Length: 285
Length: 235
Image (cartoon, rainbow over the protein chains, first blue to last red):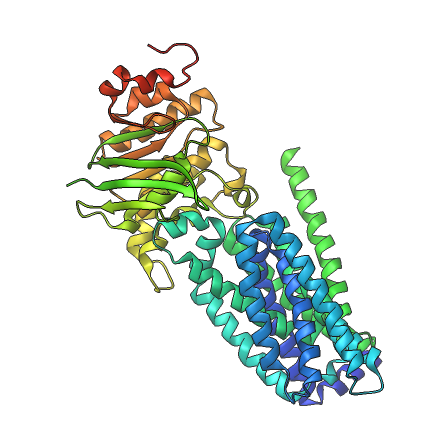
């Protein structure tokens, strides 16, 4: 036990590790907040598709040898988010298939590009870390940390200021639009914010595991709570705790950050599910 | 001047016309029922009046001091709402959203309005309850309270009693009737139920192969009433 704490305090001796923890928690928090809207609007699959698009964009950025791949990734992912949310609304089934097509296509092309224009000898290592996140939290670059921190604070601010509008548009888009809320504009805002979150989360958990950050907090909260506000607050607390726990655990037992956070998420979801089932059973009985 | 004027409307989707040459007016305090077979364009007409869809031809105008965003709307339930975690209070309050513009939070006056409408719909005891746990009739009253937060003038109701049992259906109809007669709110209702339409409405718009618009009395004497399937009791 003391050895573990020694190891932790050794890591936290580096200011950079402290920053990484803060940024990790902020990203998880942002993902969980918008995740509620995605899950309720039946758009979870779009989050998944977008994360693959972000992977493809990252591959393109690395082929172009950009020093900072963030702006290009943001641009491509935001554009895809807008397109996908549009098609997703018009024709449900076609939209579904289109997302699957785009996401698998982006994945394949991204991998091919990374192979064709390999910058390092360790292509599979590079691919692995973009798909599943940095193997160690220490490999996050310092500029990324700052961009992440600023963007996540911005996302949080937008969410708080537009909370009531996001609720209206999520619960009943037709009513909101008919009574004067600019539903299309808020859908666009939601799409852009989701794209930003996905690009941010890619640094933390990698593109394959982003959906977990988006979906688990919302689903767990919906097991236990029944108003939009309580679901939102619980999802936020849930994702802060699970991501902090996951990051600490990954440092202590030397596991990859992304998959450790997701494992903690799965365990926490099971706990919420059991509590919800027991309480529901008691009430019915 | 009429509150709502539809001029020479042509409705449809993707270049496919469903209804053409539709003309009618609704004055303040009237009760209009829109009847017609499935697929005759009733819901399309309602979406057009609400501005959710552009007409293929013609115009929807508002007058008598009515703004386009002052139309209260009771939609049919969507799939999304069936397992949506939201309290009655949150949903009713969201009816005030339309007039907020970019202001992020609800004002005291808006919260008061939501409380009044919850009371009016007899939902006081349910205000903190979860919407998805309520019965069908209670859910409709919640959505009606929300619509009342968005308007004091005109309500558009899309099949407000579908899926409700006869007793709750009667309650819902008398609630809507009271809003029309006591509060003077204009009602436009899509309905499958011609008997109820004739009982409560003062004007009828029948769309389909034959289009009729006029008072209830004129409708009962018209051909349109006889072409409509009234389970063999056409007069």
